[in-house]
Image (cartoon, rainbow, N blue to C red; front, side, top):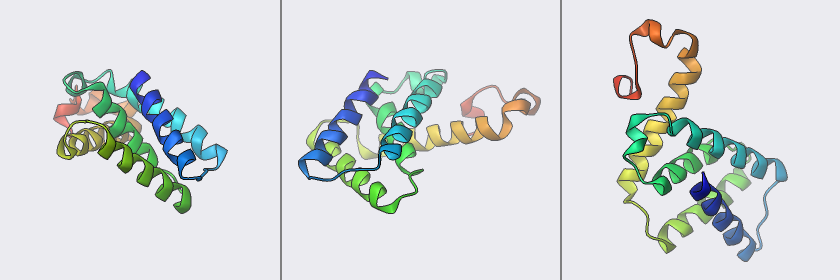
Length: 128
């Protein structure tokens, strides 16, 4: 979760340097959603083998994709892409795989939370 906060702070700094600002409710949503996704990932074996920064970036991408305001979405994505270029993270393919797995995990949990065990599925590997 600390890595997520650090990347979030880098995004805020990147936006400030550009003179851009987001709606406060967008910032609040991103902070809460990233925290939720990172905490959800911590319970799955797949994510135990991933770097914390990869999980944080995956959660950030997933949260950004839920932003409805097109202006805020574009600003966020541009800032994140700049950060990905400026710092050394896992390759894009690893980040994309983690993003997809995390998205699948969250969708599976929300759709089948009450019937998860009834499907005979015990972990993320069986579904995604």
